[in-house]
Length: 226
Image 1 (cartoon, rainbow, N blue to C red):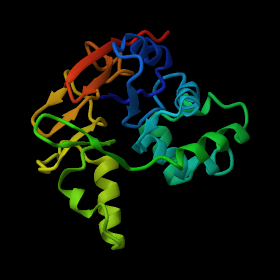
Image 2 (cartoon, helix red, strand yellow):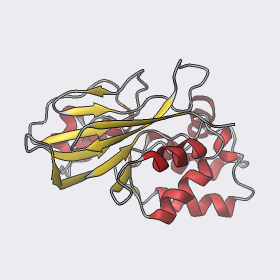
Image 3 (cartoon, rainbow, N blue to C red):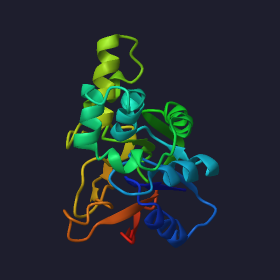
């Protein structure tokens, strides 16, 4: 049994409240990425996950931080940095750091996060084993082991950036986030669990979601950030 937690986006208080709600206190916990940005407490979220040794996937927001942090205060017109700031809500994360050394420590941790994790020993009633990723693995799942550079790039783009491009990969059950929904999207082969926790100004009921697998139970916590 495992709990998979959706996109946290710096909502640290909400995350702690959700974890406190989980019925099985001894169960494994994993995250689908996008720990950072938007919310006010990204650094606290990173440290919490690192200190507790939780499994976590690389999200597109972590990828933007990794690719652009070196340009902060040295080349603010860098296109990758501008994208992170303008599209990713980076300033809320940058404000968490008093110095670049602390940021480097967290970036080095984020660099260790995988694009997906397979849990072959955790299966649903149909024998599908769990795969977590940031966005759905979709039809690119067949490319995951390719050594071809174009295939590797296509797979990374799919699992970091794609929206609503899921498909039935017969052996796996894929749990992911990335695309905000009003309610969890669930079918026989995948689940999108991003309920827009940070998005008080966009969503009528922003929540953080934990998905219990293989029971398919859904536990949510409303946004309680200041």
